[in-house]
Image 1 (cartoon, helix red, strand yellow):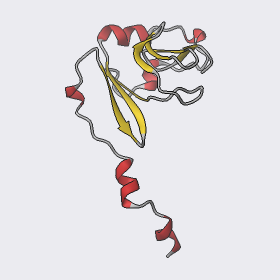
Image 2 (spheres, helix red, strand yellow):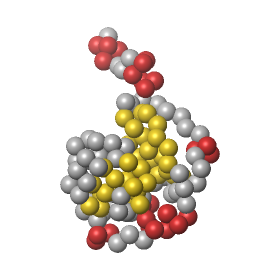
Image 3 (cartoon, helix red, strand yellow):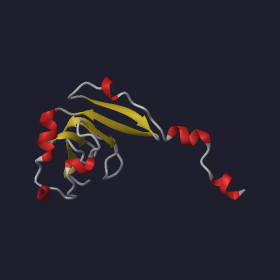
Length: 120
């Protein structure tokens, strides 16, 4: 029937899934994977990083969201690595806030992936 014809093809469904061994990511390090044709940033955060992001003043954020709202397990931050300004790929472990930096137009993200400075 028509519903069957509109279902995603098996190869499309396969690309939408990714399995990662989080234990293979050393604490304090980021790794990049490919997911749905986009970079997926995964960071194994230290206790200090978690504490720093948990204490950010929400009034200092353009789009206020707590670190706890952005993570399922605070030890691991998982982000689609695409700048919200023009879709560039930011650099991990860079920028003014210890998170990510997009050199294309100067956007700075914190260690929770929240925009802190720049046009994004």
